[in-house]
Image (cartoon, rainbow, N blue to C red; front, side, top):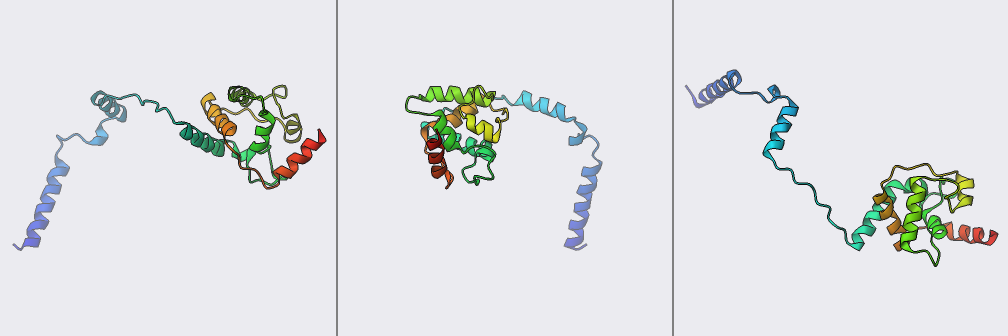
Amino acid sequence: MNMNSFLFLLFFSFLFVSCTDSKKEKATDTPVKEVLKQVEQQVEVQPQEQKELSAEEELVKGLELMEANCYSCHSPSASQAARSAPPMEEVKRYYINEGTTQEQFIRELIAFVSNPSKERAKMKSAVEYYGLMSKMDFSEDKIKKVANYIYNSELEKPTWFEEYYKAEQEKK
């Protein structure tokens, strides 16, 4: 018998023995819930500790949340005609003046975003033009991070914004 024939016979012998071994439990014989229970018993699950973010990391997180959740309506790159909400720079300018503290701004933004109403809106003309903002299901923590970013950062503005904002201020 040559070497190739021997290896071929040896391979099929192992294959036959492993396939007919009925004493072995197949992975599919054990329900998934039972396997998960066994794994949970064997592994001690540690709760994930919330790492406190640095001030810079908080700003980065706020920007990421704003881009992912707010810019679909408040985009700095949308044209004036294609907008469904004012740009965030306009929101910032209406909500924050010389006497506005960060805590006050965060409270006001949380209150409005959590439950928008005409009475709570500071941007009455925006509500008239765009309509009232839809109620969003954002956690208070997410809104705080976005508010922190808005309050402490220079926001990207649409190219047309400064001229528009100046004209709006002259109307007042």
